[in-house]
Image (cartoon, rainbow, N blue to C red):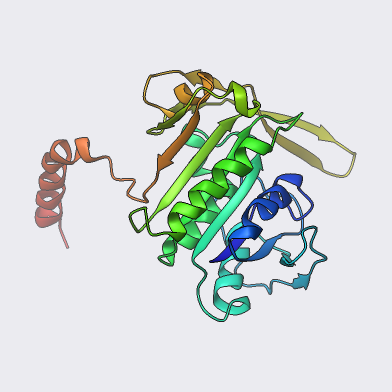
Length: 261
């Protein structure tokens, strides 16, 4: 099995190497990750300027590693298009240091990296540990290896994009695994500012999230000490609104028809 591994926490993040260590027994593993923190960049790509790629001394024996001066999406694009001689069997993004629940997936660099694999028809996993400190990576590494094994065996449908989140608990305290839908995890942005005498600067941060804990969601699963596995797709269409907008479309069409030249 040929596995490409990236993240948005950067090449030095311990979760990245825990993932590499877990996946290495399954086959060939290549790490291609940003050279610095890239949280919150989503699926953005670097355009108009070159992206530097540098070999990196791998922290896991038998793993090939590179850094990119760019985003997780850049890393996956460059690795799949250039560094691999043919597409890998699996793209993994993580293990992220922090949750990617609910609306997080729209901004997450972790999910953005996995999306680039999915865009290329490659089964892809984004995996996150829901804490910002005192990381217990063992259960996440185990879940990742077991999922990768199932993908390698052809046990899961394709195309496949999975968003996996784990509570920061030892294995014996996990209370199961749930297949979930995205929940609601809302933030308020906090803008701090200052002035150094030459120019003003602004610092955008996030307040503590408000969790909407509804059974069946990823948020609910993690709050109840369970592993959350959410299948994702890129269809952001608000399907319930389609019928309601038909009248709007007709009115617009009529307005265009009768508008003076």
